[in-house]
Length: 283
Image (cartoon, rainbow, N blue to C red; front, side, top):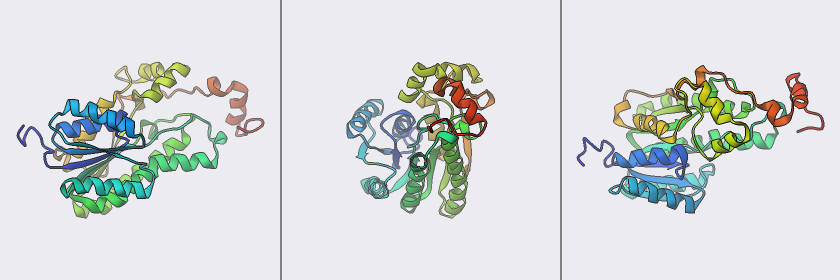
């Protein structure tokens, strides 16, 4: 293929959380458009399988794996150095590590969970930007993953939505400070997106079907839906876009978020919590 059909030819990208979901799908589109792609994740076996899948989609692409924890400074620095060393340049960073943990009311949460949510949803991005930006080529792009529940009130995800709100503010701050280097920083806000975790939610409380019914386009998202937006923000087509967070949720944020707390914890417990009291005996 020529450069016009592969607009990312010659570029190198690092995608964390790249063994599945949005990370894997994003890595696939970057590779198909010519980028050398490194996918990072904690499970080496899963990374290897993902690489095989992606190589089948883009046989001419160079796809490498780097096992490691994106929440650890030493490991993210090593992954960045590895990616940069492949061809002496780094152009695209896509930190997709995150997650909402267990659905719990605010008055059920503990300090340990706060730290876990912070590490997953904010620290993993901070480390990528802090140590990756100095390695990026001028005109490089960073694409982060936020969530629709930043703007949609949702019982039981107070910590998750708060950390992602902090992420979105960080995106704006980073875009301002890195603009002089020609580096663009943006975020995507997915709605409910198909994954192993969402399928477990469906089995637990029919949550996926509920979200589909409350989403304007009538279905939950697929990783590929989000990957297309990530690819746009990573590439030259969005060269005049920075500091923005884009909703890609099928209209989920126009619907009503579910309150499944009574089903999870019982009405008596939730009545106390809604009255501003802790559950009997703690939680």
